[in-house]
Length: 410
Image 1 (cartoon, rainbow, N blue to C red):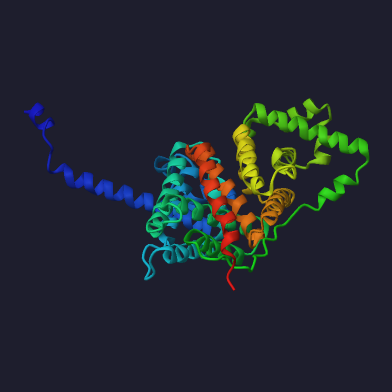
Image 2 (cartoon, rainbow, N blue to C red):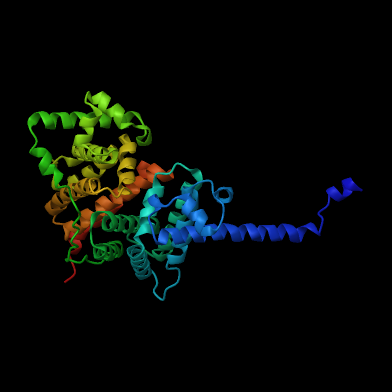
């Protein structure tokens, strides 16, 4: 009898199982809600898992039975927040619905910037659970935009959705981390919609002002031997990043490679983050992207610059990953350096686009650089490919260049 009973479900056990399942689901949501509360009054990098457990009224060990890490927990928080703020229904249709959806996303991030900073911080996680959650958030947003652009003929709905996602993300990043106005993000969304439907772009340009690094002039005023020593440290840090993941690099080893005392290194760069922000700037300025390309015909420069940028990202993906990682650092010595990279990239594109007579080259340059960054993020973190990134970038560049024939709005 015992063996027969063991092989059949005991109906009296079902309610207990269901009750336990409901209890676990309730407790899991209790933890997620507590994590929301902690993020509402703080920043992800300052929240301790103990704080969340305390807010949930649970032991930390209990919390860890539901979520293996702080990152795993907050990836769920981000997904639930994103689901709640997606504009799923609207009276508009087609590209106008995409425009309204993008504006809604920007407004949500403007009101709750800590959630955007959370998304950037989670980007560098190697946890498969976290990466899967972030990927699902991006996939849902992509499908919404894809449906909005379903009837486009100038570009495919697929390309239009990727372009819109990229512009929204990068424009919000510029606002959250580099002091750009959220109004610029809204303005760029409107310009993207005009481009993909074939309407003339607005002649009014956004401000696109980002915080840059006043210390550049200070380093130029250093005595020659100090500039050489500073550059030696940067060069050694750069080589270390080519050989190791950023997280495994110790500043003491960089100092040893540069043949300087650790204290000397810290006089030039007060933190590892400040050092590697300078490494990113140096890497960017020494890449082919920063070349003038004046020896090429004007109609070739934009395409060549796009290819050179993506070639550099493909050759050194860890440099690009660190660039994104450093955006999540609130260090006042880091963000202006990264802002200088953005400003320099825009300046190169503005020069190329102006030579072609593209209307509103400042907006076009900002959108192009934004797209390159977001496309590369997809490759580095979400298993997309550089050939696909190059293709989409070329599609968007063609839209921008051909807008020179369509003119601008009056």
